[in-house]
Image 1 (cartoon, protein in one colour):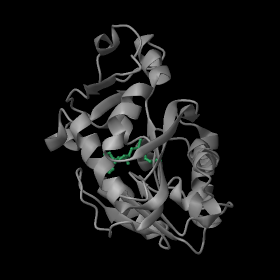
Image 2: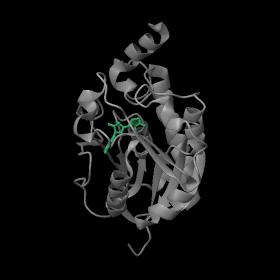
Image 3: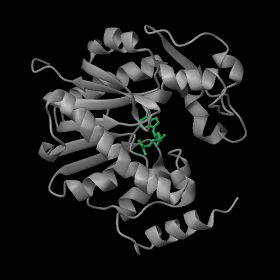
Length: 266
Ligand SMILES: C[S@@+](CC[C@H](N)C(=O)[O-])C[C@H]1O[C@@H](n2cnc3c(N)ncnc32)[C@H](O)[C@@H]1O
């Protein structure tokens, strides 16, 4: 259904007639899960506040971050807001989606935009970022690919610096299990079981359909919905990063946020 308020806000934003950074067209916004213009813009600001709050757990401050990587940045929903806060910092986004990166590089030029591969490496030097964050990316990857990215993000993180990485935790799993949340790309039967165990990692690949076959392509079976129990993260992630704390439902009250650092000795 056409939402007049949304369309108008989108038009105003897209034409730069309102305060705030430009926002992408609806079809690109939809890929982040927030198609409505106002939700997209406000969601970016809210997410940045959530990240800033989480940073306090390592004693770091957003204001001090001179180099920041947004892993799986989409069209820059969060980076565009961050650029207003940190005009003097080196800000970098990467994403596998060429359309999202193409739009961002045309409309948000002061930020560095890189189209990345589905798997590492990224074209950045070791220890080149003082802050790395990633929203709604590890919540979609199979375990082996998650592991490769954790090692790569650790390589890019400066010693002692912070990574903030969102995952679906037990709350999100329960919402799917109880049918409160659903996706046409995973059958409800995938969740016909008890709650997510603390020590569990559950991955349910998206089923191929007419709608997603172009996007899934070669990554079929490796992209879907991933869920992380807190003990699993604490036990498994230290092969790459130190887990400082896990903040339940810290992202949009939906995903958990894993606060990590890289040991000074790495
Ligand atoms: C739900 S969107 C979130 C986008 C952005 N983080 C935000 O919060 O607005 C997930 C993003 O992850 C990207 N993505 C998925 N797998 C990826 C991978 N292996 N490497 C980099 N980006 C990936 C998708 O292209 C998509 O833009």
